Length: 358
Image (tube, rainbow, N blue to C red; front, side, top):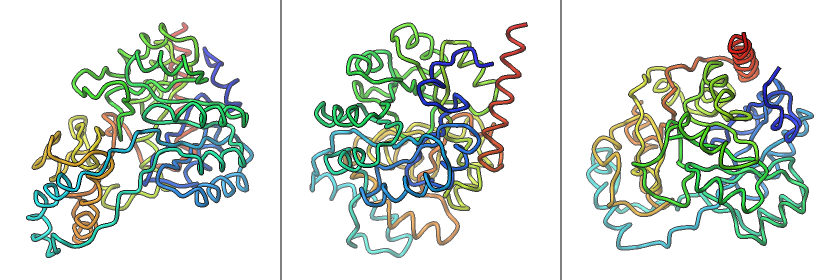
């Protein structure tokens, strides 16, 4: 028996586990498998066109009768700065030459767009059960349209101030993203990486500050972490890194190797790879250019110049320029199918919770 059923009632899922939406690392296959085992399956849509996002939801619904969450970014795009981007290209030029690439070669723009009217229209048509936002919320007119479509709205916060801000704007649940979490920090009312609290310091403070259910995220990869989150006031958990090692994820063999070898001290928060703070396994680019730099373009423009480097290096078996997003609990993860992982996480958590009650 789960000690807090608010999230189960809100999402209408069997388990209070959210499979994290991980842009670029997954598609419907992972979300379907997690949903089939009772978790909330999430689809990352920030790097997709409305048409592609619609296709993903339709595939999900054809395969499983369960609620689906569509995740979007709500960042304010950084205005392109040609001079800064040229300086960044110059900074990376030695790496281009090392890989026998032309430093002046044309590169495509980074594909990470914020939620807009076109995506909102698609949401109104599809009516996903849950819509989640990263980096704050979209403008109120778009948010109202999502709410009027009947969608449950959730969003991420990294500090209590952000959680209160989200609740004041009517979100139905809040993801408490601790500093341990892999991937991009969802911070939107602060840009100070150094003061970001860890998950297990953040959960009880956030649970005390808001009335809506709090979903713990960051550093949770087994039943012990889930039980601890509930003990501290969470109504559920969001898990990402553990799902990356499932065969249903779309990460490359190079990334899988890095995930398998990672230890507790293998990750760091960096802004080198995309221009925005994110936690990943330390690689050459992070070591030599950061992990934090003030030289690169803003999000998401810094990522564009790494595209050719990543592709060329990976052909040689190198992850020197690959985003290796992972949380601090990566060493606790195992290779197993997503449905099996979901059931194992839930079973271990319930067993641990039963021990806490005795």
